[in-house]
Image (cartoon, rainbow, N blue to C red; front, side, top):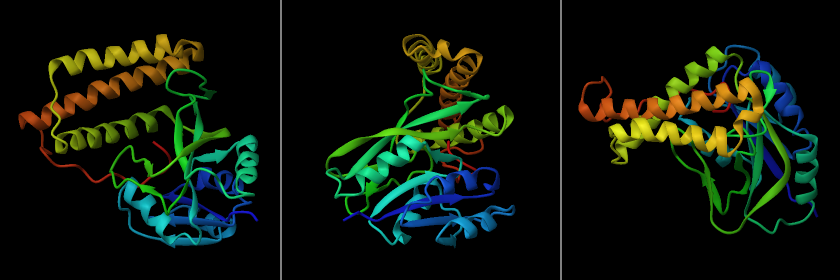
Length: 267
C-alpha cells in the first residue's frame, strides 16, 4: 500500500518557474499551493496544475511553510519552492520510497543550483542537502524569518537524486535578494544575543572563501563558481557589519528584525 503525500509550494509572482515545479510533482496525491498575493499568472498556473490553491497573507518563510503544512490532507509532506523542480531520478526515488511505509521520519535531498547559466557542482552550490520530505506527525518547519529548516524527531534518511534550483532571474535580482537576507540575518543574530567584532568582519569572510573556493573546490565551477563564492563571502561580511550597526545604535533598525519579503523563489 503506497503512502499518500502532499506537495506544498508557497508562491508570490512565480509564473516564470511555477509550471515546471508543479509538473515535476504531478504524481503526488495532493499538490497544495499557498499564494500570498500574486499579480502575475501564478494563480492561473496553480489552479490549472495543483489540486488546491489557498491564499494567505505572507507570514515569513518558516511560518508560511508551516501554515501550508497544516493545510495538507496527508501527513507526509514534500515541500518545494516555486523555483525548484525534481530531477527524474529524484522523482523515481520518491515514488519508490512511498510505495511502502518509510523507515525514517524525514529525508534530506541534495539541491543542485544553477547560477549564471551553469550548474554548480562544487563549493557551496552542491550537494547542499535540505530536509524536504517529512512526516508532519514528527516534524515541522521552524518559525524563523530566514534560513528556515524542518526539524524532525527521530531518524532521518537521504534520497537519491537532486532537487534542481534556479538561483535567480538575473545577477541584479540575486544581489538585491541577498541584501534583504543579510538584514534579516543580522536582526536574528541580535535577538539571539550575538554581537559582532572586527575579527568577525575579517576572519569569517576569509575562512568562508578558503573553505568553499579552495577546500571544496569551488574554483572548478569557473567564473560562476567564483562569483557565487565571492557573493557568499560578502554576505558574511555584510551580515556582521549590519549586526555591528545594530549593536552600536547607528542604524535605523536597532534590535528589530524586519519582516521577510514574500518569496519569488528559494533563498
